[in-house]
Length: 201
Image (cartoon, rainbow, N blue to C red; front, side, top):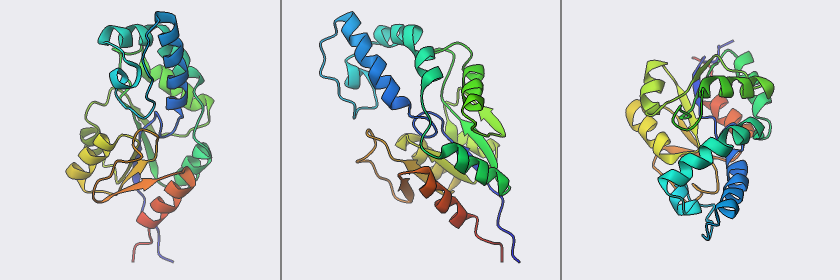
């Protein structure tokens, strides 16, 4: 019997494993109400200035006040824990690569690690403060990458030319790029990765 390839899978955290956007929108609206920021919130926008009408100082204050609460209580994507565990059981290596950093929240590593463990999300390695995910993917020999941020997907694909999957979200639904496939669920991600890991002939 031919053995399937073992792959190192690089996975983003926010809005790929978690449903961060839902909580961010909830607390973003609350912040605007408290600060009396009269702005037509646009949940399809990635940048907080376009989404919430925030200045840099608004965003920093929001992070100080709400980001830890938000990230501690965010829910997981459907079936993500089960699928990642199955991928690990099949011999793949799981690396979580997130841009969470100290300028937004204290000790992003511990916060992220504890949330992953609390929600039964397996990982072999956790990387925080990833400003150039293509470099972290290259250093860790990542063979498949999954992220909801198109810019990250493009940079990883252009650098490594590996299979890259864009996890569908409200703010990337119109985005596209050659050779980057869009996925809509973790069940679909599992099937895509199984196809990448076809038996070695």
